Image 1 (tube, helix red, strand yellow):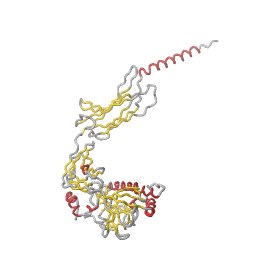
Image 2: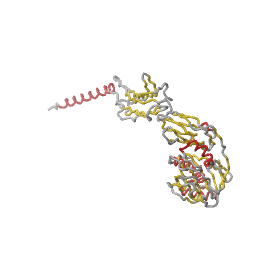
Image 3: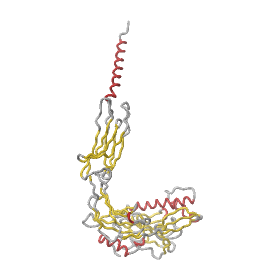
Length: 458
């Protein structure tokens, strides 16, 4: 008997194949891919000088173009346009997201006006043979603020020496979120003065010892959208050329100082050679120590911890001054060049070292090139450093008084003999101590400007 089911089964299979063929033919005609998702995230609270806008597009398989525009009323201002090669409709695997960042502000968009603006991101999609899908649009509205904060200098006679300090009193308008003095690569933050006027501020600042051009010293203020005001602050500048000297080193000296420093400084990688280890310490550990001092300044108290002039180390002889540029030689050949940023003072061996002024101990330990060292915070970023001591007599966090013993002189670290290395720092920048040892300088340059805000007793 003949099997009648076979033709029926073949017919059904044929119909399935025909249906699949029809689907395969019509799929690219009508299907245009998955709908992408567009995210727009401003990095600031508004549009000012230059506001970064992060754009992320998920499922961008069929995205062919992305446009970023700023819309104000009837004005549409293009910011960025980028084209992409869309994937085939048969590519079902997900594509990595598209990430773009554009800057929107008065520096990048001509004709931008104060008020409100809409940042519009449009993701255009590749179409099929018979269907063109609508673009996907995402928008964010932001306030537009183009005027920088106002700055009014209220103090006078800003006379600064290269490597020295000064103070400025000023008033800044509401809306400023950061203000102070930009001095080359260094920033000296402003602080509020006591009183009902919350916009009245002051800043202690310095001109770096290696900067002979005071034109780069500016009082600045910025708001939360990047608008920035700048005002010249220095009335008179006195350059102080850097003194240079040559300092020979020998095996006996290196054999004494290098092993101890390396044993106490695990961040120093062994170079496998005494001379190379010395250079690594003198050059790179010195830089790491300098960064630590800059980091410590961020912990400084926002108040004056001292009321009297700073004291030099009594009964001592100055053996090296501030900001000497030293060329180090070994067997008559130069091996390194570094700046000596403090005063070296020698007295008797293991002499008592006293605090130059009252404050709080921020560091009391073995500290790289300085050996046994103490750093005292005096408030508002002003610190003093005492290095090369044979012993430390205070603890971190301890309050100390002017003239109080904090340790004994020695020859730890990179010291060539028993002495004290003394440095004054402002926001981590070494400055000349001579000014801070002078009661008249403090009175004229700092106290008179700050008035009742500074409890100074000369």
